[in-house]
Structure formats: C-alpha cells, structure tokens
Length: 162
Ligand code: GDP
Ligand code: MG
Image (spheres, rainbow, N blue to C red):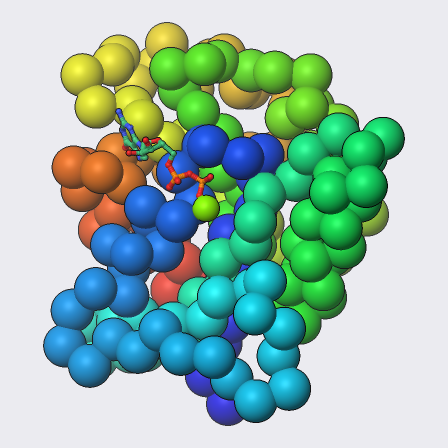
C-alpha cells in the first residue's frame, strides 16, 4: 500500500495549490475513488522513485457554523486514514487563532505531522519560522506552493516520516 499524506489547515493557506503541485506531473491522477466522498480529493504524487497518495481537504473553519463542522469532519476522516499529516499555515497572514486551535486539535493524533509554512517566497526563513515556533510542532518546512521553493526539501523530509 502506498502511503497517504493529508493536507490540512484553514481555508486559503494553499492546500490545493500544494496538492496540484505535488500531483501535477506524469500520470498524476486526480480521480474520485469509489466509496470516497467527493469532498476529499485524492491524487498520486512522486518523490523520485517513490510514489504516494495525497489527500486535499476543504479546510478547517471555526466549528460554530454548519459548514465549519462539515469541513472539520472531512479533515478528521482524512487524518484518520492518512499516514502523515501536513499542517499548512500562511506566512503572509501569520499565526492566527484558528491555526492555534487546529494545532491543539492535531496534537490528539499520533500520526507523524509536519508543519508547512506556505507563501514564504521572498520572506526571511528564520523570521517566518519564529512566528510559528510557539505552536510547538517542531522544525517547519518553509515553502512556496505557488512558486515551488522548498517543495523538494519538504518531500525529502516526508521520506523520513514514512
Ligand atoms: P486552500 O484553500 O488552502 O486550498 O488554498 P488555495 O490553494 O486555494 O490557495 C489560496 C490562495 O493562496 C490562492 O489565491 C493561491 O494562489 C494563493 N497561494 C497558494 N500558494 C501560494 C504561495 O506559495 N504564495 C502565494 N503568494 N500565494 C499562494
Ligand atoms: Mg482548497
């Protein structure tokens, strides 16, 4: 069985952009899998010789709203079936209270987790990292899903988590 990596985080942090970048090349298939709800999108990604599945989720919102609970449910399902979790945050927006809440929520899972700071192109890496340090999630990957910086390093880090 190939490993499955779940992309989670609040809306608009760049989960789908990273998903598209990871699954873009070769026979990348972004297909509905039988028995799987359409609200989670699956694709095949490559890291050198190795391939793995990625699942994109709608994003985790405040729980109060109905849509917020639904999206949280989707993320929960993705987390349950995943082998590794990428928790995305946004370097431009900085740390938000929702990020803190999600981090708290993710602490309950025992799965390997990588903090991924996205939209970091043109930013000072140490400064960006220091802003999210208080989440207590270890060494972050600092990337630009849109431009591609840091994605190779993230994939190398993934190999150590599988
Ligand atoms: P999602 O809601 O987490 O799936 O986020 P999307 O992938 O839909 O991206 C939300 C917005 O952020 C879009 O306008 C993207 O173009 C933008 N975005 C995604 N990745 C990056 C990045 O690395 N840098 C910048 N500057 N913008 C990005
Ligand atoms: Mg999305």
